[in-house]
Image 1 (cartoon, rainbow, N blue to C red):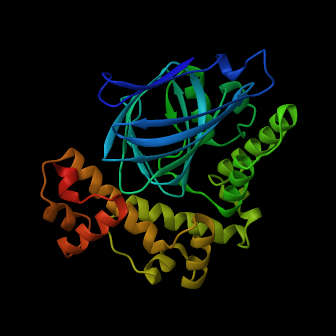
Image 2 (cartoon, one colour):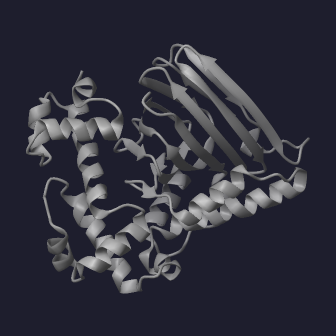
Length: 328
């Protein structure tokens, strides 16, 4: 198994990493590696730990300029991705849509013989935790009776690359605590392997719970019917990012009150309703700018900004670059 990263489209290779099949090295209980990268595009470091059916990698990288990376991986795995800082956009012909992630979000993706690209920005360092599981290990924890997970299972069976969540979920305080435990583990050998396995499975559980409000509500201060209404609000925001709805209008649509919506949305998704909607609009604007011949003023109007100046300011704050630079 090996993964290659290129700084230009399958031309100039900057990193090549090799791993035993399903991360299993029969000569060791656990394998740990650390390496630094100092290249013309920037500097970074990566810490890796892997053992039977599980890989944990944490990396930090500061780019000198906005860069497109191209990936080529021979492996098959299910990857739990946690973007702790920065912003990244992954594209592949095997995905229906671009895979967008911003600071504080997570997702789960299945890949097999993956080829694709990732855009990273220089304004702030990228800090990412990636945990790869063998498909067999992941499938042990697939819940029954959920169409989203059944689709994931079917894609794994066909060897078809698949993104579990179309939009990344927010990393919760419980997840951050587990991530800190994983990165700060001081144990060695078998005890480290046992400790990390237990923390990773607990982290996977928290990820998967977020997709099922009826289960997720058990760990919240909210009642089940309130959680369902808050997820309905999230769906309303995602279904039409251009519509401007007040908190009162949203509460009326889902049959709740503004106080419960504000508090509950923040508790579940780690951000306010307004900020979540704002980020959705800006992501939509970025997609339009990348794929259409359109002016900044027009895309600003299309996603509901009355002032192109305010749109430009918000866009630059979110992505670290101006919309005109994305367009060019």
